[in-house]
Image (cartoon, rainbow, N blue to C red; front, side, top):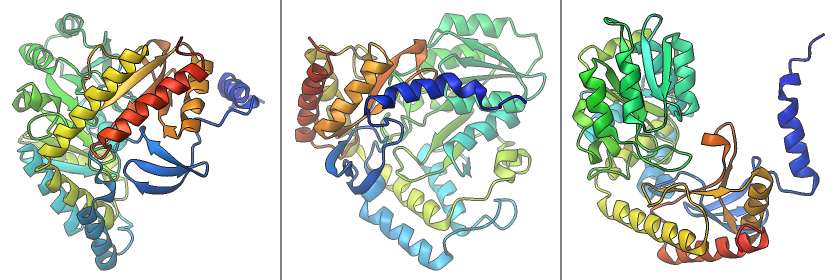
Length: 400
């Protein structure tokens, strides 16, 4: 009989070899207590958090926590139903209104996760006979949405405007076309040339979906993301985002100005057939989103943190994913997985938690130490982090 798990044997062997020498499991870290948006107890010691995507530090905001407690007391722990049955509470409508206000758009749909937002919108909008043109480095949820919808998928080289245009021009005339881009790509922390890409997409009759998961709340004058920052938000048909990054809780969403958008509530399977978010979660998201509308000072501080850390690591001799800081993500490129894991553990021993990212999630088979900064990191913490990287880099044989 065929062992259905045999396809995982190479990964099992890789993990076994990594852990056999006493290496802490970099993919099984347990936080024993979270003290703040930037500090937790890990392995019994106080650890600076530099791998949480908590970009704006909203997880411990007093107003956010208070709104969640109030909703929990008034509406209970869960909805036990889909949004199209008994799962829409007043809080779900409130958070959708907050999203419309935040983005200046007419329509918003909230999903139970950001993954489901991509899965649902992409698979519903682009189906059999339609074409999806997307960046080869797109997130797994985007690829899975393409597969679920059964559209023809046409990938192009990362951030390559010319390659995207060539693929659009090859699509049969009259076919439905959807271009999918990301504002910030989460592995290297680089941004897309959205303005030019969206122009090309529109010239070729395509609709455009932009995933702003890693830029919402932080990039752009109002925190609306890279499309706002590049002055092309009005040309985007669908913006996908998540509550699990800058908003500080969990959930996903899509905002749009399309006049027929509301019909998606009845035809989008990952929306129709999933239980809605608990009242306490949508309440925290709503409060957080409305506070992010007035978070200019926090955005400015986060940019300073990003510039300081990028320069410090680059000056120390580390190879980074971008030449200049482009987002709150700074990726440090490792020679291979084994030395990347050793460096990850050396940092943890210093009291610093980062993400170890490996193929196939990473582009070009790279192993990365991915750092995601927070607006609540102090300037002193960032300087401390740079020192930790230098010492760990020497200990793991990455520097020198």
